[in-house]
Length: 112
Image (cartoon, rainbow, N blue to C red):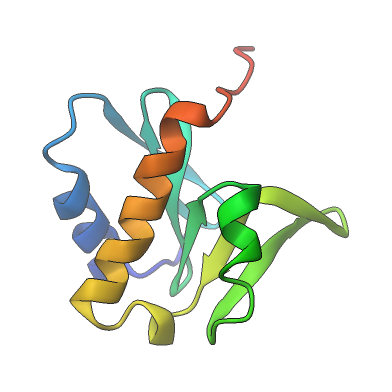
């Protein structure tokens, strides 16, 4: 699995203060689960954030942001963000905040 380990370290550092964070390998990278729910992932050199459908409407026109697609359909709560959109720390922090703000509203995956 090849993903940006420096980006994963940045995310790890941003979430270190939270009590319930788990890392799982998925989406060709690593996903950070917060409170048992997918929150932020690293896939290749991109960050994938679960920010909710309402927030997505306001960010899709930004450079480096695209909606996640699953089986040719938009994944309603997820966006991929390329490095250009989180290069600066304030931009990175914004994406992490959007994902953490949505986390309490997100539905947890069904346990298998």
